[in-house]
Image (cartoon, rainbow, N blue to C red; front, side):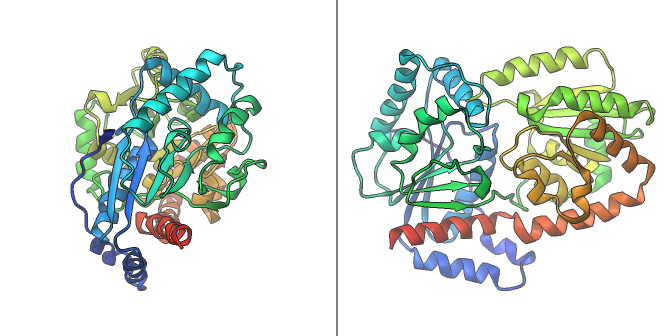
Length: 412
């Protein structure tokens, strides 16, 4: 059997504190229509990435709505995850070297072996991202409905890689993408819907913590609480442009003396490339005592990330490509000013005045950092608008509603 991720309980009723317009009652009514549904989400790692972050809250809340929901994780060796990381990058538009037949066989053999271990005692499977995409092909039991959930920007995929993956995706009953523009033009799946990810307002990463306590937590990490601080929280991934963040910080520091930069990243079991990026960032950070690098493997967990996002003067997310960017929603929810790359799903989170802080290059990023520090009244305005947009559009109950609505449609 595949590994099932053990999760504690969560209460959907907590969200009555946020929604007072009958939304939670409507969600419960939708769940009642699906009583008896057995749902299984599948991905490639139980920690360290956006999908894992989503499922940590999603699965317990779906269970609290009265449905049977599990989260299972595929297994694979280093070679398999090297292949799938290259495939992941290629679906986001990176050039992909022609797949050798042996490489194709490794990918397919791994999916076959995982399919053999997958319990078919479910009504709906949701398979996340390219790593396990061929599972559907190798599962002989066809009574269930299968949904492929793509969390990355697949609007301009490498053609060779996409043509390899596409036939396996087209065996699914439905596909979910973060935005309509991410749907490849030649994808033939019966039902395709856009559903944006969301954050859990009551997770340890997003619960409100007093700013002075957050500053104390950062002080224990070596950050000077009396000096300005910019933070980027992300996976150690070239698409997040960590070296561009460092350059923007260096430019801004010329006008903001004493500026500090914290790069808070995560390393995941399905991302061998992350270790290389992590090492290279450390080499660069060692040149400047005001650059700090932290990770989930060095004691920086969800509470510490919460503290960094809350205590920072500015949070950055200078992505070059981005499926959605949960960390953008997290910082906006905490009313922290955000400067982010004008990429993928980030602009849908930064509307109105927030859109003025979408940047396309290092120089623009540095200019916006300086502007916010020189105009402190802007922080409050951005914080309020950011939190309202996340509350209205990007909290977990809305995500659950959208996906349950799709399941109800398929099961009819």
